Image 1 (spheres, rainbow, N blue to C red):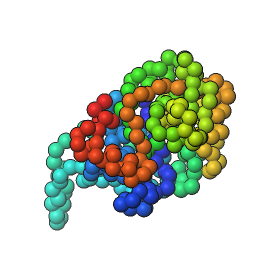
Image 2: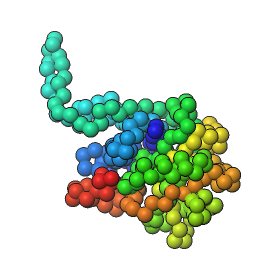
Image 3: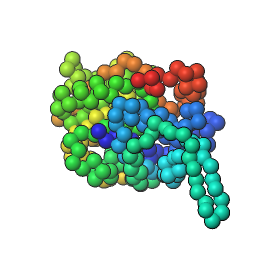
Image 4: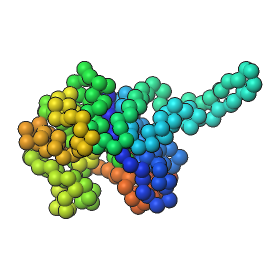
Length: 260
């Protein structure tokens, strides 16, 4: 299944990290959080990625254009017989990465709409943000989505209440979605979605179209949004505390998102 990743937001303001670095390129260890995210999908068999680029798109493009140089040792032969020899293998062989420039100032809904052609003909696709990690069981998530047949499945998690809160009935049907409310103890959107192609009927090309507002509320109104409950690890990268936590887990060899 194709995986769409929103990578176009403004640069990080995390202390100690360059202000002009796109959030998906914030490092965990010596590789970007985006790499960690994509590796999780790839382990579950999802290796066809579409990256919705915007702010500092060139940084992400350069990383993938020179991926072998970033991730392996290599030998350069200079002169008329110039050549580059890369040493060793890696687990990313076979990844297919489409780097789509979706505009500098576009909001999330517009970005998704602008990559519609890259998922044309697909019954379902996955969608997430480029700055969050979790030990999501993607097989179970996809199976749940296919079983209920609605347009969109959202993964609900239980971190501190700072994000869009949602809730659903016993079957998983979403009946409420509130963007960044006061904490009430309910689940919040973990940002891991599975979508049917009909999602694009709720989107348009307006620069200011925010996926998490009009489109998702429209899906809830029409009874087309379902909740997949995830009680495991989930963490976004918004603050220096988040940065230190994720890097600490990685350094200690205790990264839950890497063990699924």
